[in-house]
Structures are given as structure tokens and as C-alpha cells.
Amino acid sequence: MAKLTEISKPKANTSWGSGLLFFTVAIVAVALIVVQLDTYETVAYPLHELGETMYVPARKNSASLSGVEKIGSGQLIGPEDIIYDPKSGVAYTGCHDGWIKRVTLSDSLTESVVENWVNTGGRPLGLAVDESGDVFVADAYKGLIKVSVDGKVELLTDEAEGVKVGLADGVVVTKSGMVYFTDATYKYNYPSALNDLLEGRPHGRLLSYDPSTKQTKVIARDLYFANGVELSPDQDFVIFCETFMRRCSRYYLEGEKKGTIDIFAKNLPGLPDNVRYDGNGHYWMALPWDNSLMFTYTQKYPFVRKIFAFTLKHLRKMPDLMKFGGVIVLDLEGKVVGGYYDETWGMTSSGVKIGESLYLGSVTKPYITRLNLTQHPLSLIS
Ligand SMILES: *[C@@H]1O[C@H](CO)[C@@H](O)[C@H](O)[C@H]1NC(C)=O
Image (tube, rainbow, N blue to C red; front, side):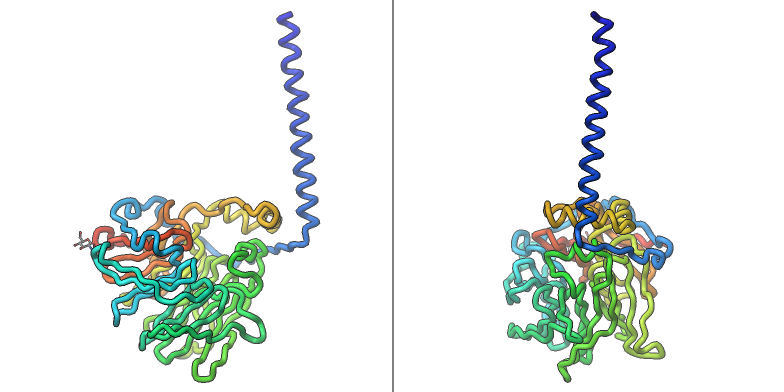
């Protein structure tokens, strides 16, 4: 009897095992056919353009684990971009609920007052402030908005070359009043932006708006999710980032190269979002996602992206591609010289140095994170 059990046991296991295998293969086959039949088309990214990886930040940053402060906890829902008006000492941030909030910064947390300023009725992302204190807003749903210093809201533009702005994202304004802003993707809207990543086609644009003529022009097209923009210290070029290609380019406004575009920084260690110059030789660039293995494979294989597009559409889910996030610091030539990076800082969308503090905005967190840079000085890499 003992012998019989010994013999029949593995036998039962084998047939159960092969049944499971058959079942799995069948499910996968059906899934693949269904996904293939899906009309959503995904294409290859031009990954050969990326070149070598330039710098990988420390995966764990002790700075983020000690001494960080939360500003406006519960009052600032998804504070995406942060700008500071040195004249008034007030910072502005755009929140998920459509509010642009005024934050009076103070060393003391309790004295850092958060006020509702204006609600755009959309989703304010990138912000810029001009000499007179007027605020320009790249609103994901509305387009380019101006909020005058006394709170009057005006839509400046929402289309270029007859194509509607699909997802206004980053904005800067020059001393002479020219506005440069990005349309991350004219094809998808804010809630479906992930589909732009999955599809793999460049639907982004860098646009300019001239307040004297009220004209909107396309400066650069075919961008892979056009996101953060920033002016060089001399305002001789505009930096603009392509999130899904992990690179930033510059468009020259002055000098010999005026009107031309070249690469500022490429093969970044993560996906760039807003970038801000600190007035002192460094650009602070937010990376909401790192260049994880999962992201690399997803980007590399259009078929994998097609599967994710399918699961996103039908199950409203896809795997989490990101593990780390934070800010990297670049010098005037676009070389990465350091950063603050952590597992808990995923979805960091902006990093702004004001005084001796770093203020981090986030698409998901309900507060602005502040890090004391005197206590956590940037350790430069050579
Ligand atoms: C940052 O840390 C330094 C040194 O500990 C301290 O003197 C300074 O007040 C801190 N700044 C803020 C904004 O808390």
C-alpha cells in the first residue's frame, strides 16, 4: 500500500501540474490574441539616441529620512510646481483641486501660511512669475493662463497651428514678457497621459506666446512628452525637457545659435519634470520616476506597452514602473553634479532652492516637502 501511494502521488502531481501549465498557456495565448486585436498601436522609441547613462544617484538618501518638514500638510494637494516671487516673499503652487495657493514661507512651520489664491477650474501645473508679479500658469486642461497680481484670471491661448493644446505642462516668462510653455501631448489629456508613454509617439510641443501680438507659435514639435522649461541665467536659451526620452534640449533666444536647438542633457537617471535655476550656477531638476529596470523594459518593447495599455483600459491598472524619485542638480553645462533621491520621493515633480532650503513639489503628496540644505549639503560628484 505504501508503495502505491508513493507511485500515485507524483503521478497525480504531474497531471495536475501539466493541467495548470496548459491552462496558463491557454490564458496567455488568449490574452495575447485579444491584445493583438486591440486597435491601440504602440511604436518603438528611438532609444539609440540616448547614449550612455551619465550618472546614477545614490539609491538611498539619508537626507530624505531625517529632518524633512511638511509644509501645508493637508492643504496642498498635489503641489506640482513651486515658484517663488522674491519681491513679495511669497511662493505659489498649483494643486490638484484647481487652486493656486499662496504660501508665505517662514523658517517656522507654524508661520508658513497657506492661502487659497485663485482657482483655475482646471489643473494648474507649471507656474512662472514676471517682474510685475503676474503669474503665468500652464493648466493641464485649460492651456496658458495669466493671473494678474490682483487675482484676475485670463486665458491667453489654448491652441497653436490649429491644434489644441492637449496638456499644458511647463512655463517660463522672459524679462521682455515672452512666454515659453510646453504642450506635453496634444493627443491625450491629463488623466490619460500614461497612454502617451505607452504609445511611444512624440506628441509634445514647445510653444511661445507673444503678449504684444497675442500669437502662439510652435517652436519645437515631435517631442516625447514636453514637460519642464527653464531660462538660462542670461536668458539666452530656454531649456525644455522630454520626460519619456529622459533628456532636455535648449532653444537659443540670443547669440550665434539664435533659433537653433541642441541637447542640454541626455540619458538622465530618471524621467525629468520641472527644472528650476537657483540663481547660483545650478539647475534643480525633478525626477518623479527613476530609470528602473521595469521602466527600461516597458519602454524598450512596444508589445509590453500594448499589454499595459490594454490592462490600463480594461482593468484601469498597470504595473508601477517607478521605484525612486527626487531631484538632481545640473551645472550650467548640463552635467549632473549631484542630487537628492529616495524611495519615498517618487512622483516628485519640482525642486526649488529658496534660500538655504530645498522645496519639493509632488503630484501625489498633500504637502510641500522642505529639506534644510545647511544640514544636508549637496555632495558634489566629480
Ligand atoms: C537649517 O539648519 C541650520 C543649522 O542647523 C539652522 O541654523 C537653520 O535655522 C535651519 N533653517 C531652517 C529653515 O530651519
